[in-house]
Image 1 (cartoon, rainbow over the protein chains, first blue to last red):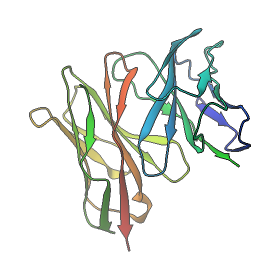
Image 2: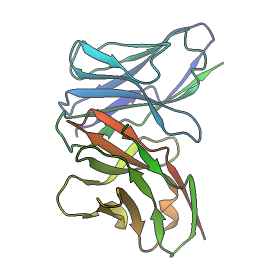
Image 3: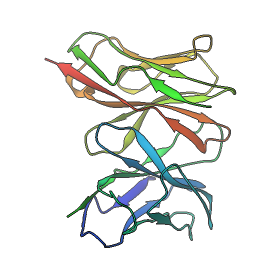
Image 4: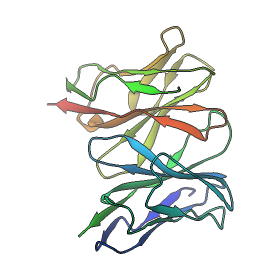
Length: 113
Length: 113
């Protein structure tokens, strides 16, 4: 079955450490996205990529980095520069055609301990 | 600026009564509009989408939404709420090729027995 997979589901990190969240899709979508969700808040865009080897900053990119070396993969690194990294992270993908919906992964909950 | 506003942060209904979740958008262009549902600690699931075909859109689980261009609204309704409908709902607007996607802040639906 086609879909988008995030791993791990839960992740714990010590302060000062970098951590990488995985996102893989087998939907052959060109575009991929990372969102951050905090309790009681909507989704905020961190980074997005419309094509391999290219990506753009979203609204809250500071303290995060991404790569897009393969069409199916869009990993997100939360660096030690991110001051408040504890959150729920969602990855999504879609075709770059008008009117197509985004497909979401099941999310990764990151907790800094 | 393009935006989407969910008019209620919380809605509470009794089981078996109608559901109305309100969404307004600003638009300089023809948008595509979506409603997603998110259950706790899960990804987002598409309920329905509007892409300039019929203005009344039927989705999964008995939900439907009506696109009203004159009111720039896309309210989500269901005739009879079920306990399993308790979740967070997001109204989403997409412009020009799908990559410029704007999320509403979300509406949390509570269903009382």
